Image (cartoon, rainbow, N blue to C red; front, side, top):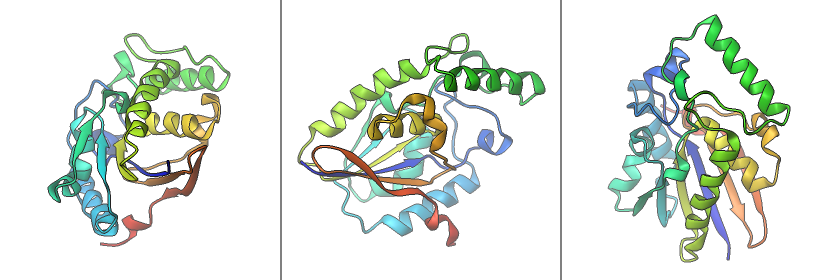
Length: 205
């Protein structure tokens, strides 16, 4: 079985613009820029014969690829594609204290403590478990050869580690911005990134 995965991060929200972490517990809408990014992505990829669309349970992912759903492409929500939960820091103002807390958590993760998390939040290892379930669902449909997946920034980095066999400690080796594309090909044995952090579609009005 071969399959091509078009994996995108959702479009911009006001919290993205303000540099505030949203996480799994903030179900925010796209802002004007995010809606523009969604249109740009659709214009660039509307001719791709997607068999299925997979999104998280947070509405910003569906809003980002709604034009494809409007074409009649079937879609499915998978909680395994939700963003990592940042717990008590979700939606909090961007202060020196919160920046220090995030920096410390990132150091923990890079240092190998992948069970570290904020209070009421999730660790990378916990996200990995639900992503494995989501991936199993996606890959079980052998009749779907080309799929579009819309998800979230930190979760996207973790999923790309999962697909490519990189340790989760290297999650930051996958840069991203709002509505950037990672195209991943599965040849029946392994996954290969064939388009890395592609934002070409965002350069056209």
